[in-house]
Length: 144
Image 1: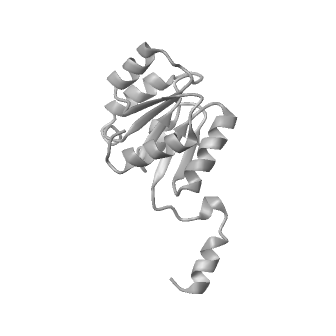
Image 2: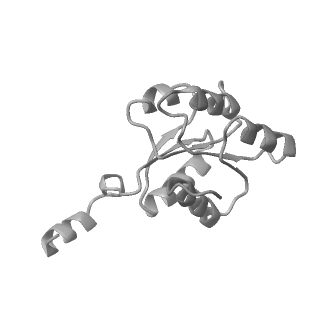
């Protein structure tokens, strides 16, 4: 890369900066949390596709699968549990990692999420550093 091309790339707006880490699909209806998570994922090199409901997630991701799904449980309409089940049933998406990011702290919710296929379960409030670490670990094929 030449000095000029590097200088030009560093001036691109965040959304146009090429990402090497892939796309994380974020399904979160709370705008403040969505913006915060999206910002920090992009800051460490992930592209993001943020949905505020689960309604069109499968249809809009099946042709260009993400590297990971990050799902809230309490969503309007289809909840995060049902979306997790749908992802696990989908031929092209079922092997992708899923992290649940939720305010639901009960052990029964955690067990159900993991039973139906979530790879990890993080409760709100959460540490952004821990979230990023867990996203990276799952995207690299590791476990958390």
